[in-house]
Image (cartoon, rainbow, N blue to C red):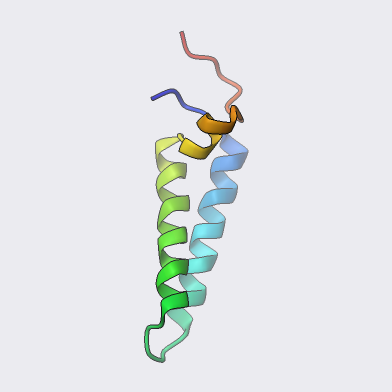
Length: 70
């Protein structure tokens, strides 16, 4: 798995994941479908940030990681 997520991209993904999680956590009502979808999105953002790899980036050929691997 080649790293294709750069540092700025990683930071933005983590911040978005935290914001989404806090938005869902703030609502004290019943859990609805939209909250579950948002939590899944937050989890995916956090996971791709921690792994430095985005499968969608590899499919469309985007690489925000400035370091090259040999």
